[in-house]
Image (cartoon, rainbow, N blue to C red):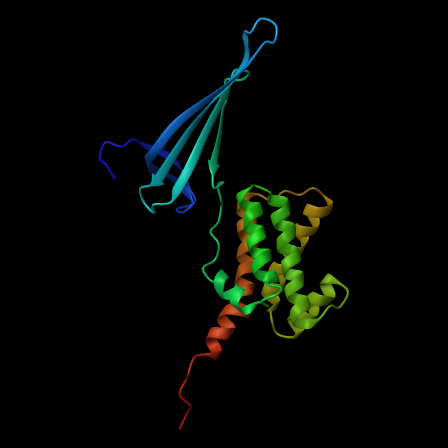
Length: 219
């Protein structure tokens, strides 16, 4: 990077926080609407586009700042949209374990992260609940009730009593999002994702890796 390039502080999806970025390119666009009778301007908007690279992780972000004649407020958008959490590193391993024709767990997780990036918190929480239900049905069959599935899931040893308590929090959050308009806070969504991803990693990722460990037998 050239030493004379301008720097700005914006949110970085790689670092998950506001970081100093080096500006790679800038441009502005202006749009105007005119009165049909006398041709005088009646509305205009200006958008400043800034392409920048994080000085830490080198993640690239497009920053858009819009201002219109009808408001003194500057409306800021960035692409990709801000995310509060990175996708798990083991996601590709989950894809390889899924059925080739129906990789539902991988697709569920990807769709949940798309919802989070677009600030669709309720959709993300409902998706988390639905994913957990599908995992339980895959492992213990459909007992025709979420809590019956959960009971069988615990009885078959997939979760402990403590993990069950945590999963019930996810179930309640999903139910509240669907029926009572509940919108989880950022910290709450992170907690729900921790519970869900820890469960998936334990059942599908770590279990497979543990079976591949060649421990010498006692002689």
